[in-house]
Length: 556
View 1: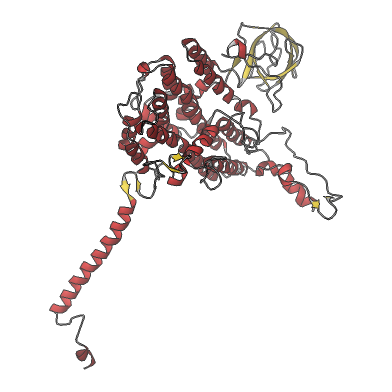
View 2 (view 1 turned 135 degrees about the horizontal axis):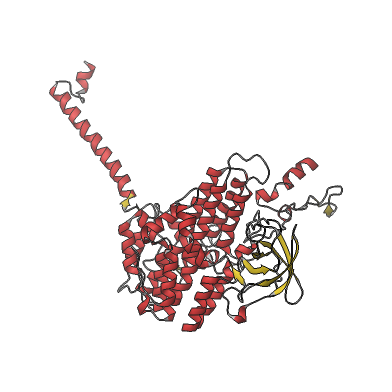
């Protein structure tokens, strides 16, 4: 028994479960646990918390904090002034919460080389210990170094500076401006900050887009990544998300190959919607997929030792962290600002919440499906099943498009029905369309043109029927079903809005009517058989050997 128990417990992390999930063998008669059986103890040294139910195999707490940048951006946009938009842009460009680090200059140069990741200990301004690690490999005689702050699940002392406004800065976990650090294996060094803004952030929402050319198109083993290539082919810009966001922030126009937006006629309300939804649903959205692709690039099918695929699992965990953020709690019941939150919001509008996808409350059925794929993908990576992990990634990517389609349909209905024809709704519809148009275009350029003309910034009219039809014809191509998307639901009436019922993916696909093809093929086949039968009968008649004879003739 103990051998079986130990074998399972040693692999709980790989299986995506914990001791708390399984529990311990219980004697109900004695109302206590069986004696002589050791209590289960998770073997993970990181003591990692779940991310909306997902158990990461590596520490990605710091990655998940990117949602705090998103929330800070949204807070500034809500103020709705030129100054607040400038602050929002500064947070977008410089970050504030994720991958915080300090740039310092040592009083004396390093005697020996130092490897990336070497631990560092120093003090904050109030005398508390500050933990970190060097951010790069440094040669001997180096004086200028970068120290990344360590972030864990406790996260009680942090260094939040970057581009944040002064009233949002938290330096409780920052190195003091002038002090001493101890570098593991090197000893103690006095240092001073090498500039006034020495606490910075290496991970920003802007970088997710500006680094796309290298990380998604040119310099990765699997480059160009399929999903990103669709977006590059459509927009003609590697940093299309960045260009959209900056144009919205500044009230300018884009110059894409397709899907342009002219924000010059929008005020802060419309620009703000395009700005804040562009950061989450265009920049972060694509980077989630990038991390899953990176995990597959790192996957090694020949692994026969423990943790051989740790890099792959870490990249996969990062994708989950960027999808979810830090505010969704361990079970997904929190209130985040990224893609997990979006899916939960839209399911209430389309009656696609819950395990069966037929409720207006609870966890989005899309999130349930995506997190099932997240867990399966992590296990496949651990086992070196790289091709299977690819299947998981592709399905996640398809499902991630569903809330974007829902967003387009929701605002197409609002505008077309005149329920809400405001600049805010028009801008929201435009940015949801911008986030999904390249995928639709890859299926049907004509369908994407229809959606763009109806939903673009400055559209003169919007037809829900035309937009819905354009998507419906391409659901299968986009990896979706009518049940995935649902319909625009009137909770008060307990019914779908007129003209906004769920789509039927079997009706049409890629502009071709499947039902028509099937019925046409069957009827055509019957007609063909009948025609050949008629010709055959005529030949028999002419030859004097008809198929149907008088009964008396047959007997004789």
